[in-house]
Image (cartoon, rainbow, N blue to C red):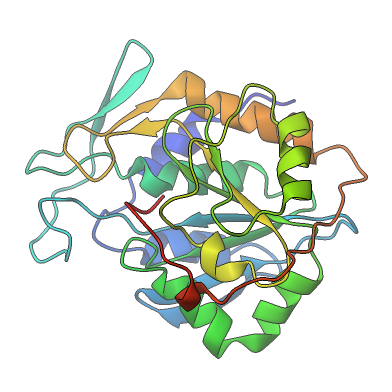
Length: 262
């Protein structure tokens, strides 16, 4: 594979923390991209060209335990690198925003390989952007569920976690066990965008290397971010990816979700 671009990661981490607009606009600049909505009710979708394409998902927003409603102004986004780990230098209780700017940067790294990209806002406040897509944009909802083999969200802490929540079949989990060497699913609790987006196909959320999200102590381990990219590269670049319908899917509102998101 080509070397992942740390400069791309650093650019994504330096986007303003209080708004998703510049990041959404960056993906909207890609040829064929479809951007809809505003604020938390917004998304940008860039369809892929491969016949066996999958949908790569990330979210543009981020929140802090000290200010979950963005009620105060944000300082410029800053970070420092020490021993291969990025640390926040923002102060005032706010971290890197690696949840989920690190995931967005991975999507950007895969923009030229034929898979579809979806960046949404409002994940941290209850999958607002994903709900807007599914309820108010039936053409996109039908396309992402009808023309992709499965969904992969890049929005999970740690290095070697995957989570399917309630949108992974036994068949899909067996496939992941053979495709994601060293990864494991710690539990099925909590939620993220795929819990809303996966209506007809299975989905999985993968680690991207951040820890202590939503706090001033948030970090991003660069080696773990790279590992996520290398895992995706060996998994979804080869041709012949299968499709995994999701059987007996309950609507999101019928599922009891426990714990934190992501």
